[in-house]
Image 1 (cartoon, each protein chain N blue to C red):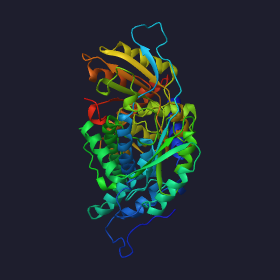
Image 2 (tube, rainbow over the protein chains, first blue to last red):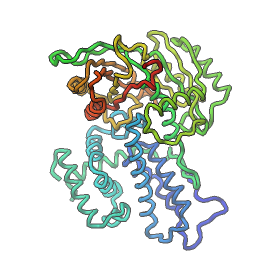
Image 3 (cartoon, rainbow over the protein chains, first blue to last red):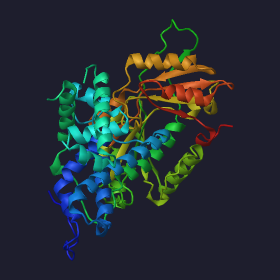
Amino acid sequence: MEVELLSSSESPSAGRVDVAAIFAEHHVGLVRLALLMLGDRAGAEDVVQEAFARTHAGRARLRDPDRALSYVRSAVLNGCRSMLRKRAAMLRRAVPHEPPVWSAESAVLLGEERREVLIALQRLPRRQREALTLRYYFDLSDQEIAETMGISGGTTRSTIARGLAALGRALGEGS
Amino acid sequence: MNSPVETRLRDALLEAGASLDPESLRPLRAGEPARRWMFDLRIIAMGAVAVMVAVAAVAVFLTGGDDDRAPVATVSMAEREVALFLCGKGSVPPPCRGKQVSQEQTAAVAAAVKEMPGVESVVFEDRKTATDDYRRFVVTYPDVKEPVRLEDLPESFRVSLAPGADSATIAAEARKLPGVALALILPAGRPDDLPKGWRPEETVSVFLCGGTQIVRPCTARATPEQTQAVAKALKEQRGVAEIYFVENPMGDLTSRLDRSVAGFGNRFWVRLTPEADREAVLKAAMAMPGVAQALELRCQATPGCS
């Protein structure tokens, strides 16, 4: 996969977080995160590109390599929230977007069982949806999820527990 | 140990995530804002929505009030116009690959489409006309605040079809021509085709799930049961005089062929009496499962109405 990292005249200096390298390494995962949040690939790629452009432009302010990935995930998550808000407004304006991957109209062919689960997930409150995706797709720890979402560890745990319970009810199962 | 819900969730997320082919991802580029594919599509959509608001139905007459009668009678309707939106300045939907349509391509599209069986006429709609359409759209929907650079609005061809022409094939073939960004199959009908006694300003349109232009996150094409329930709910609204149902089988079919070939789903036209609460009718429609969008037909979008 081709990834243009930095301009040729620029190289990451000591003490500066190499945002481009982080994005390069995690590009696919970040687009998948956005895809699971938004439902469509075009929007997911847009969000990640935008997050990359913004983070790259402000990379001088990033000094903590240990938290850089978490910051980048947050940027993507925020981009998804922003796009979902725009789309909510666009719903009132009859503007199209690609059918979500979990819809029957999507070109992506998912099994009925998978689709049922994803639709139930989409109906959960945003915070629960995000926390469950970060946990069960990316296997992030409570602390990593908390940092990505900007919430406390305790809130993360309770959010996941409530989300799983709600999902279980929606799917007709006990959690 | 994972609970059944956790296992199901993990499996579903894995499968959805795996649907994305890493090799096909657009490379990330430093200093480059997000591509304008969504933006372009939105601009195209505004032209399409202006058309959608302006069209009327030729369908089956339904009277309200008798719940024992089948609430929905259907008629299949052949489309008679296809809009071909050309790649505009800065367009990056996949068919355009970032290139604006050239004069030669524009001429070639017109020539090729004219030769297609079932095509009666091909009319070029320039940027100024597109701009006028958009401005009318903004007047109709004053809450539209998105900044749109009018010079980016796409040019298009409006292709009129003969009765019985295969609009899906024509749209799909036309979309393959270099310089064409999107082919949109327009529903038949014009405001002057509204049933006798119907006026655009007293009409509401309710689009059902199905078709690629659907904006609400529909999970599936509206089922017959949902359609009947929508009809019933509409008829129960205060001030609803009559409803028409228009079936557009192409909407769903074409969405599965090619994302760049779009069609409209089935829809209702709803005639309101003066005492009707428009907002309540629109809200009631939007609250129903299987409804993608409810819109008002207003004078600004339909020249000639008073």
